[in-house]
Image 1 (cartoon, rainbow, N blue to C red):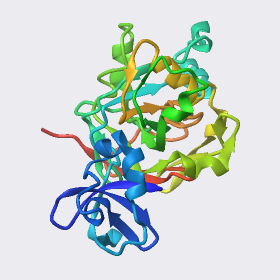
Image 2 (image 1 turned 120 degrees about the horizontal axis):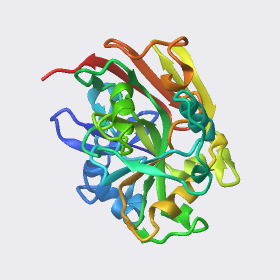
Image 3 (image 1 turned 90 degrees about the horizontal axis):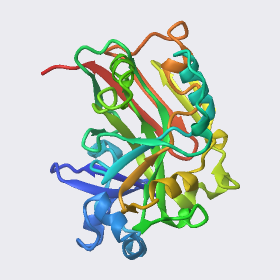
Length: 303
């Protein structure tokens, strides 16, 4: 299933099932039995999924009638990992650094701002003072049930679904703050995009290769293809990331785990000789097999 969060014609937030004919309002079509926000739905998805009737004609909206938002406008948390070896090697080499041995020992992550979430077609404000704005092409999984000390062998049971993630980065802010030995933080906290929909994990089974998926990942800026990789190339699987994230800590439904940037998946890696840093007016489109395409446009930040 492809699930979205949207605003209806009355401006009310709903969750919906994306179909060829349009979008089915799950709250209205179930007479209010299915909740109208995604985190509540995920928390009890085993109860709510069987209630979905894709053949219902009640509250079926055309895509032109609604405003699509991030599938998870208010995730419980967002952990972003650093799991693609090519990205790690290249981005560190740009700073004259080798990959530290510890990177090969444990998957590492940082927490980003789960209250600065953007959806498809939303504008991204370039932070005031930022001159080196960058996109980051990532895939994210969403936790579907509570668990602690989850083994990698069990981790698949805790995944609800997947979506595209753009981990926007103010590289000049990031470069300065990480010299202190802490971060990234301010270079990342202004926006993270998810969308265009949340795909339940069963829909990706056709692409499975072992504990990974063969999913092409691309990024375009103003229609020009810049980034191209594949999720299958990831060094640490989501199962390994979940094992690490849940060690000694309880994960809850609605928490997001980001993969980190695929190889070539940002301007930092490509270099400004390939493309300049992002400017107001630029349109960035990320696309991943089975997960759709996520577009955003950059604007200048203000008060």
